[in-house]
Image (tube, rainbow, N blue to C red):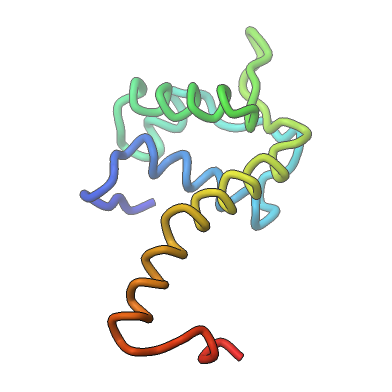
Length: 111
């Protein structure tokens, strides 16, 4: 995984999990790497990974079985789809709309 200096690393890790879930690479009840394992694999501080896992846990995408590890939740794909839709509609669509207006284009270019 290559990191973008314009976005916090912990959010890039979260985004990577979102992408892998949407692509079907991570499925419900799959065990994921521990905080330390993922930190070592990515070459980042375990506290950064923990912050990502906390975000994923808070949104219901992963859960922790104490003493066993972290797992993908049953409804993870639906949650990620909803989060991605909201983000797209809130952030991407207005930016695309503004760009279309600046270039004198309208939405008919998509037909």
